[in-house]
Image 1: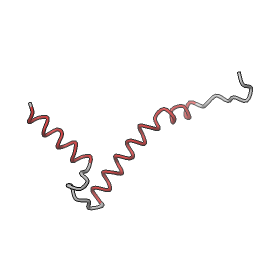
Image 2: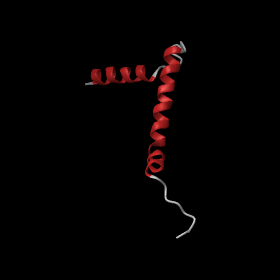
Image 3: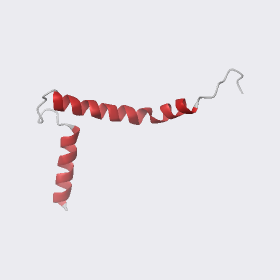
Length: 63
């Protein structure tokens, strides 16, 4: 074992574990905010909530 090795703390391990998921959630949140408050037309860049609503509508119509 390397004598200069220091084990990571619990918080550092959890931060490394959840970093990709938190980045994805932040990216989707930023996308939603840009679409909602940036006045981006829905036909150019639909918001994640519009995509999710359309998905649910079509899934219920499909049966």
